[in-house]
Image 1 (cartoon, rainbow, N blue to C red):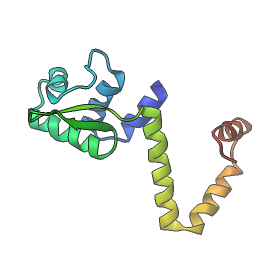
Image 2: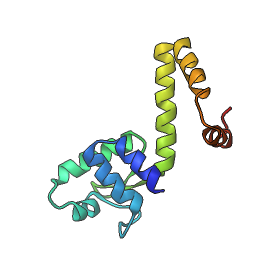
Image 3: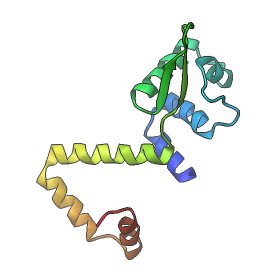
Length: 130
């Protein structure tokens, strides 16, 4: 998971990555957690900064956000794993490239397949590719 975590965190901004590292590690973080729980880990940050960042992570699909009945606050929990986030992000980026460059992108992907080592080809086969 360390490699997946590293890749996932590189796809996020610094504060988003810092928060998701805490969420994915889960060490002592309640499930679900609140803005206050996260601020205990990052006391130098303003409540509104943490709240806004958690809301953005929920908007991006990394966190589930649920309103607590009778209270103004929300609770959060991880919606995805680092590896799943990297996979869906990769799929989304490939789709963007294909939409933008069309057949040229497909040809470039096909050309790249010819440069794969036998080990890379085997990994690709196991992943459900060619």
